[in-house]
Image (tube, rainbow, N blue to C red; front, top):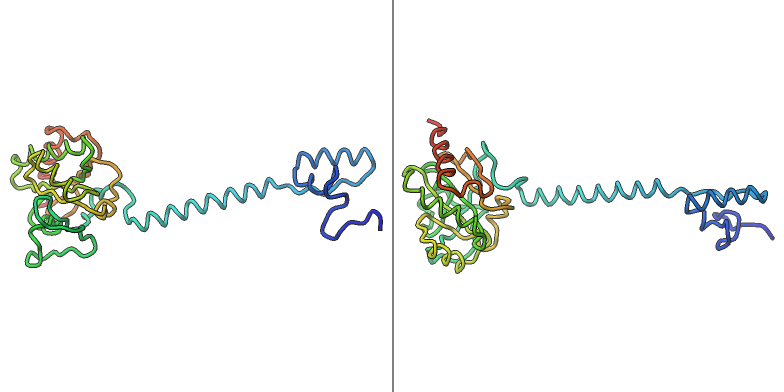
Length: 245
């Protein structure tokens, strides 16, 4: 019958002026309503999509937040390094100057000297012996290598403090090349698959952790403000001064 509409669709021709496709746009719908009023026709119902766009935006933001939280939980670290008053995360990494090949053990490193491979840098065993200054660096970053240079330079001033470093996401070849060229004698491990870097959430270097005997972090140094011997030595003295009795 003429003038009838299909159930579920508003009156009017689907593709014609004032039809239901125009009703999807609030501005066009308002103009259509005014035209309809001037010609004595009932205006087509308006579908305001703005609230749906708002809902879609909120839904999208929720998805981003969920993904970020899941990623954070998988990494296990919320910030770069371990903050003060928290315990160092234990690992055993092959020493660059050794012939030990493979990746670092971050899941179940031994804390037993009898089971320890002397070719590995073992954080758990080191903090049993005394305070530890531990740096994370990238072999291709100049400032990061300068931090290890500084640690090497001041290490003889603090005989009761242990100094060590880890080349994050580095091959054995690259690590030993840097160690030899800089003539480092402090222990330097290499993190072949980046597992130690992920464990500590290393996002920037230099990163230096200063920990008491037992592994509790006293200070965490981030960035190149500490590459000078005087600046780093001051923080090491503060570590010794605050060492629990």
